[in-house]
Length: 283
Image 1 (tube, rainbow, N blue to C red):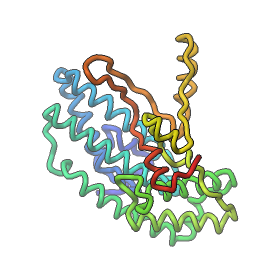
Image 2 (cartoon, rainbow, N blue to C red; image 1 turned 180 degrees about the vertical axis):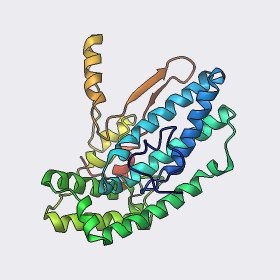
Image 3 (cartoon, rainbow, N blue to C red; image 1 turned 90 degrees about the vertical axis):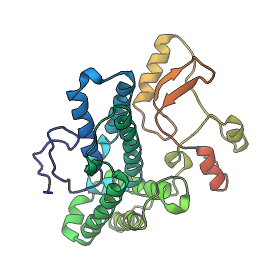
């Protein structure tokens, strides 16, 4: 593999080729995605409703990864846990799409779990070198106070949410990743002099408002848009769509027929579970 050149297209683009990114993590997933898209493009007549639904899910997850592609080195480090979780989810959907569409998958694109582990190890080594290289490290750190404050907050949130000790996530940070995020945080604190207060619960815990009784016992309540005319509802939805907050999830659809009607929304985790695990602290 060769190092990717800045002039090359996004690694999720079909024209990317076999070049590796400097960050490594997600390269194998991107290759699996490109293989799936090539299959769709070459067999459009074979795309039924089920496979089309898988394609929609894959594209939605890929778009969620764009913020990582556009971020700087230290913000990407802060987003490690979230990135790994999204890559796990995307690969699971790709597995389902490959099976449902009877897509012939090359051997090199099958064992994504092992490849992701290797990418995480390679990436940890890369960040270890970056943190030791003073000139490159200083160039990658934000200069403006606002940027420093944002990065510190994201580093702390990433560590709190995805550390093994928190037991909040199915795929926590590795020991090496935790050490790197912690080292980056300490480095930026020493450079900026900014001290971040304890993060509020609402910033780094996802919510599950379905268990109203449990939330009530914890002294919490959920909030929903007020009912109104279709225009008012659409206006509220358009405003909420632009928000980035762990308690707001995007609604994708619903089914009202059958014995078990259901809603479809983006992936989230339980706030009540978090509060129970952390002394039932109130937000």
